[in-house]
Length: 100
Image (cartoon, rainbow, N blue to C red; front, top):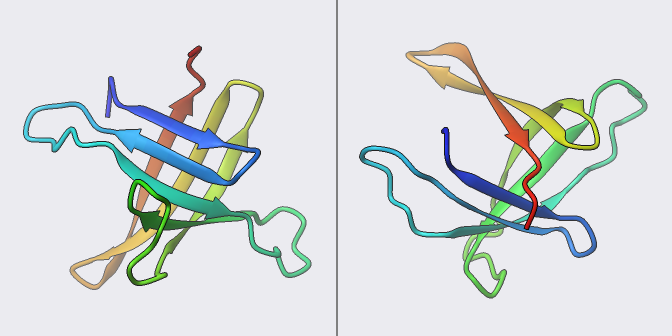
C-alpha cells in the first residue's frame, strides 16, 4: 500500500509495519522474521514471518512464509501465495528502503 512503512531490522530479526490508506488500521504491527533452510534449492528463499506484540512475543507462535523474489541494496520484493475460492492467488509486495 502506497505510503505504508515497513522495517526489517537485520541485527535482531525483528520488524514492524504501519499501513496507510482508506479503511486501513494504522496501528503499528510487529513481527519476528527468519530465513529457514532452503532445503538444497539455492534459488528458493522463503522468509518466515511470525506476528508478535510490541515486546516481540507471539501468542500462538504461528507464522506464514513469503517467497523472496528480488533483493538489492534498496529494493525488496516478496510473494505470498494464498487461496481464494479454492484457487491459488499470488500477492506481490514491493518494498523500498527508506532513510530514517
